[in-house]
Length: 315
Image (tube, rainbow, N blue to C red; front, side, top):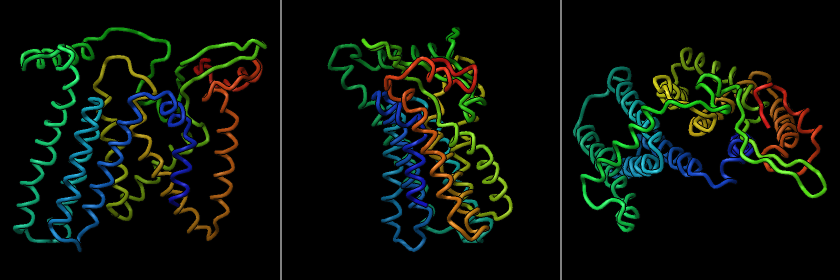
């Protein structure tokens, strides 16, 4: 299943396009994955020493700080991370009937340092290049910079043909055209951000399955997948400015986990791994089919046109 998860990530389409272009989103996603990875290590480390548990929380907070310093959307992932921590704590106290002890107190106090102090320090340090360039020289200018960025996003009143609403992202309804070109021989070259339909469309019933499984089994591992998905998606509901498909990028790794969860359940139910191989074959075929769109590989105008399964896929 680990191989399936890695393959899904490589063939999502978005990962290939965004990372290949060298956008900051790749770093954001990496740091978000790592902050949740170390939080997961903390949650499953019941048999570890307090020192080891605190090390996991330290690195979780460290990568949360790096995510926020990369893009403010890292805050949305941080909200989910806090929910994961406190839901796990609530389960220990209310469900598992564990008594509050000195270790819990030390852990909570340490979290203020790991998830508040460290991210603030990292965020401030990220402005060192601005200081060296003379753009920001004092705390007043720093605060003004934050106000400017916030007001820009809050007050932005613009339209764009490639913008899309948050609830359309799972079906990859609207593409984003990055590059248009023609070779000397007349071949067409395009680079567009678009999800692999075989993966993205299939992920929708998989997310529904994960919700149902979470309710039926009351297994925290399903909540661990769902909380970051919903915390980040819900965060976009109140945003009025135009948004784009790439805002779904940090959510995508957790969506892939719902596919793995569903495939694992299905293979156990059918008692065969054939379904895995069929699914892998399908997503590889579809990825290859859309490869010219993802990569700018020269192709014909007719082929490009045939790939427009939806009218909103613009290239």
